[in-house]
Length: 98
Image (tube, rainbow, N blue to C red):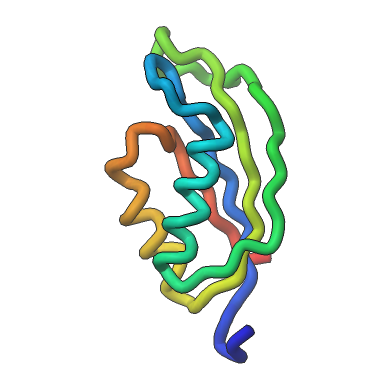
């Protein structure tokens, strides 16, 4: 681990409606994107499907949640958000320093 690397915990809300991809396949894709932004995944925790407290889309009232702990350079969170922005399988991304 590089001395400039920081640790992060990211929570992803995954949307696989109408897709043949499973949640595990989507998580593998997200892990590949983390590796592309020079991050190193340390832990993956599947939290399961949860209903939303505030529904913004009546067709999507709940989704699968996954937490991924990773380490990477200081610009990794912004690069990760930018790369996942157009990925329709990742509904929301929350990244915080651990």
